[in-house]
Figure 1 (cartoon, rainbow, N blue to C red):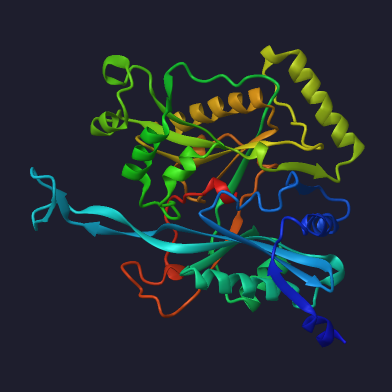
Figure 2: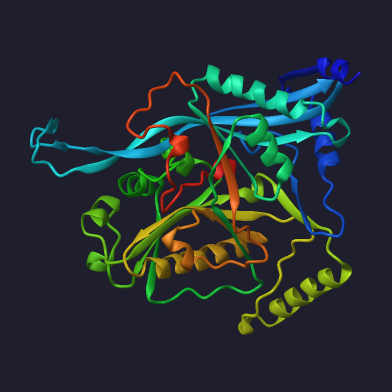
Length: 414
């Protein structure tokens, strides 16, 4: 009987005209948290493909038995940095590239086409039937058809069912363990050091800065310009010590990079609030009352700057900080100032939290304010090489490469 039911499973592309209700019903059935524990739930605001819609190429598949949708999966493809190599090319006075043995070696990014799986759901009443596995295999077939060399997924370390599916049955291996850092948005504004100047960069200046300084960072998207110009990008911000700019005025990234200050930091902000909302469920009445009391006090007495628990027990939005980078001995302090600035922007827009995701060994992590109780110390990324017919290139098999100090987390799929 089990085999007959599995054979009845049909996997096809999501049709927004007819599948909306069925997909929402599966999402609702999957919203069952562990008894007695706090659980995080997501409201996609009526758009099932919102988390991949802004990617260069994306697909959503549904699994159905008869006319009932019983599972779904989303996937997207993009080109990212997987390593770096040394370049000995230099531009001469005639504005073309020549190669010389005397040129200084400069690292340049090595790109690969990578696919990302997210939003895998199977209705609780139809689990252990191979539906999840079939959805993954169908999505990977689409990845291969579109030239992706690797596929990766992100899941919680303690999501044993998900980890087992991908590592035991789908051939993925554990790859990276970045940290998701969450900071509440208080009722009061966070003070930003008056020793720091914060400059809002144009998309052009931000792109130039990112490509010149961080293009060799793992997972850096080659289409960073599309990310920065997206309507969901709130802004790009640079922090420098006050008085460190020549003539005290911003003269563009080209001039900045030719003579940068001793320390600086940069980041961009993505508006997830208009894509999805989150909600924490399972809290006791005591916890909810305590949280509300802290907010009331904070709002009534903002000059005390008391930390307050955000309104996470009802749907809330977030700002996501990405592209964090910097240089110099005070880069972490510059980062802290930027985080304070973003907190205040999030407060004005009605967000509940500010979030970022960074590599475990990220040097700037010390400058990122966060609450440990809200954060995830180790997210888990698993990766798989989709084909053996690809050349190893200059970095070899990416799945076997050691982690770097930093990682670029694309806000489009967070």
